[in-house]
Length: 545
Image (cartoon, rainbow, N blue to C red; front, side, top):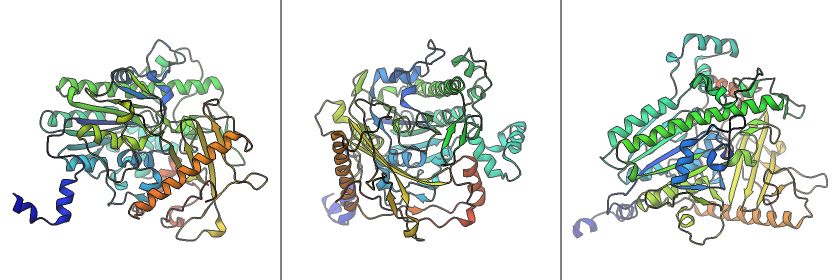
């Protein structure tokens, strides 16, 4: 044996000995990672929520029970407010600055490693089932999964009358692909996710350890709980007598009107708005029910006591708290604070609450740590285990960003958060310096020419509505912390291999039309006029170096 080892190439031997999860003993735990798209933390019972018009009905009984068995994190944050980069951070352990997949035109560089790859290489059976278009494998999500499949309903299985109604709504420019993507906002996919999960679990239970990733999309707008179960919406708002519905939520002129500045002005009345939020609760309840069924399946198969369970969201949704609806618009709390629940058999104290700030990119390192003692070599995230075990450690902070367009305008923002402060800023493209290879960003300024930051003291302003004045000592303290975090992140970036995300395959006209219908791209720019993917522009530092 010694002679055989010495004959190995050095690099191969090092890779073998430094595998993420040690092969010296069988991995201890299965891993079930569940992502709920567009779920605000403050809409779950375990975070204090009760249905406004039906307080006797539990919105999230199964997730509440999971929190009671394990750990709930009270200050968990995403890196952004939309699906694609948030999920990439979740599955790579990297913030958006480092994984680089911040827009539709990018795919994860193949030299970056993911949680699924590490667990597969450690001998795990790996499967992922997703139900929203931004989890498609073309962005790099399928790497490391032996099975990675969509649970969305194929168009040929959609009732003909529903398709005809959609065609009439979308107009003459509709294509089959446009129809398919618009249908994803109306589809009911949780049963299909569960069916695929049951099949995989039935095959793997008792054979080899497994990693199962499930993505639930039904809580995402449009808010149509009665499409899932007749009467479910009324259950959460039994006294409503108005006419507002949740269909076409993002585009309904009865909900908002664009202003001259390009923002969206609220038109919907407060009672109608709260009715739609009750429909949102109903859809969360529907997803919660299906998660409960998967957890029961683990019990039925006799593997629950050997299965780590983690439930998280990618981002939240806004209901005019800061002047808009939906997501991918800003980085305020309602969009970037996320629920995070973790149950590790024999390791997580029942009902524990963790109050210090944690990040979505801490999850992959944590799952590897608990499952098999491994780690992600490049990860900026850190295992949550020390926090759970009561060890003292330096407080964490999170950096956030959006890189794209909103209502036809460039929308580039970043943010910093720690246990007390939030520092948010909006940047613009300096068109005088823009060329075909990269974008050059500059920061918005106050009237006196000073750089503009929106700084909030979370200790006194949880909802982030009262901006601190630049002369306030807290403003300067928060900005100094944001500067230090920016420098640290850039230093980490310089230590990592200099990899750009790869360009994703170009959007076809049909795909471009799809994204227009979903509100994700500028409706005034046809796909043939779009420039090629640009190198990611460096964000200007929030302070002088």
